Image (cartoon, rainbow, N blue to C red; front, top):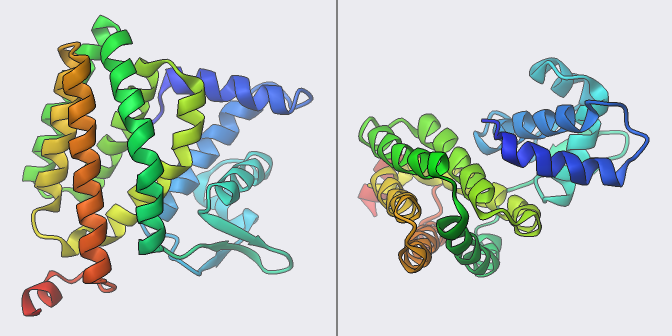
Amino acid sequence: MTDAGNQTDAGQIETGQAETAPAGFASMADQAYAAIEELIVSGILPPRGFVSEKQLSAQTGIGRTPVREALKRLELDGMVTIVPSRGIMVTEVDVKLQLYVLDVRRELERLIARRAARYALPAERERCRAIAGEMLEAARAEDGMRFMHLDQEVNQLLDQCARNPVATQTIRPLRSLSRRFWFQNHHAHSGSLEDGARTHAELMLAIHKSDVEAAAAASDRLMAYVEAYARETLRYPFSDHSSGDRAAR
């Protein structure tokens, strides 16, 4: 999903990096980034699989120049590796790396949650309240794809409300790695959607109420859930997305 507030910040940063880029290039690169990131996070582009710029351009309906720029960003984020003469390889999911990611992400998420509770506008607070309910509904329906899209919107909404572009740019690749890890393993974790929806909803409702300390505490609980999820996966590495394997252990 696209967030107008984040597009502005990202566009300003991209323009500052490449002043000769044609008008509209940054926004198209952002669109290409979001589209390719979703293909990777959802597993449509599998780990260690190769793909070309031409294929990605056709698959996303976006020109090769913004696709190329998006791939550079995705490589910096650790999502792909550009291999000369072979193409673009999607990186593997690393469970242990996820724990290192969470060490950093926990501190940034708390900062962003505090700022979001303090600086969110009335319309943004209402969206926080609404999205909390939508996540719970997606969990009850066991709709993992809908949940993933809402999770992305939550991240964008948090960043928009927090109004700190430095934090936004720093945390973006960490969130991408976490979302990919969660989505590719949630099928094997009993109750993961319900637990994830509940912890996200608590955070969104704290921001809706402008409660800075409650938002910080809810952010910590959300990160605790994500860490417990990662440690459980490290203990039981589900590679076939089969919940039956877990029941047999």
